[in-house]
Length: 539
Image 1 (cartoon, rainbow, N blue to C red):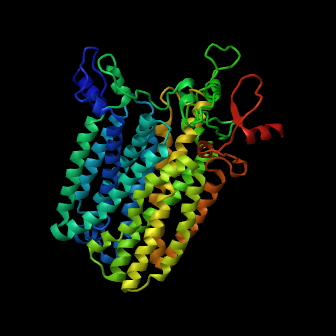
Image 2 (cartoon, rainbow, N blue to C red):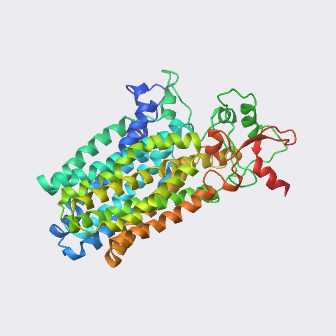
């Protein structure tokens, strides 16, 4: 009985019909509070990831007894271990989150793991304990990102998802910006343990917010007592609800040829009917039921659009995290900067992350393809020109900061459209084959794949940059990352938002979904299909 009460408390479920609603239910289940809590969770995760970046090189030599000449190697290893743990934990977290009745419960489990990781890293006096701490920290991050992004879609649906994910991007950028700065300054002025006192204070705030959070579907249990606004949960839409979305999508002929089926601002009279007709009536005897796949991730991975988006996320994360392993040591040996300076040098590359909501809004309006491709293209010359920063002078410092600022802007333009693209693809598959992912959908598993891609970048980036910088120098490291950018831009150009050769979309919603909306004779079923797919079927 006590275990049941504890589980109900952690998940937020109503214990029995006579249970009163939680205090301040309307506020705790509001869209604003849920988004703030998720942003705080992402901020905490990124802060705890980045706060030790300028501290680790010195902690390795002072506390773990690592020789100074081996510090670069172990910095890269610790960063890569985090990425490896994130890579493994993300799909497991997504699978569990899509099968549990509460998103809050796995979020709390992730917070416990994050607290344990922070304690380990604080007390570690050996490389082995540092590695274990980073492993646990990576596992916790997998839970936060996977479950958090799924809860975001549950809360706000598909409409304006790019812009709202941009606010998550701001939280990530603020965490990464503040963390190295705080870590470097506090370590230099107050010592090693003071850095972790800040971390524990942040964890306490995060714990309070996650315990206060009430999901909308959980809050709906008290509808008989108090009304809760916005009870709908994304991923469980009926056909009628799908028709009310601004950019619902369909797949045609087994491919991600997606069409919005929502009501336009001009009041088109057929759009709701078209979206509703996508899902056949339950009483129809002529349409066989859709089989439910045992492994939703395999269904998701059959989408070339999704693979292109994941590949773009991996490349973006690789380039962003590559500098974590080389930039502090580069400015230390080139400009003779202290740990404070090593933390401050991350500001130019991370401050542009504040533009993420703007980039997300542009993606919602004009589609994800060209914004993401433009970001990759803009990053290429910045990475190549890093080779000209090679000695200590004021002009060299200004040049480095300018290149990092433009690079940060380019990378900030890539992630929001690709994250929104993942939501569009899941919605497309669900509308095309209702129930294909089960009653609870597959948003957590889809974002688990995103986290895997991001983690792959966290794994590849530091190792790549550290190895190339050590063997061939700073300049070669820069242009090698530029080659990665080219490799990321090409698939994104071809498949993001739909196959580029058949993308004749005109309106903003159509561009977001990658297809032009046209009416065709479909044998009396009614609906809207893809013009390019019709041509394909005629061949």
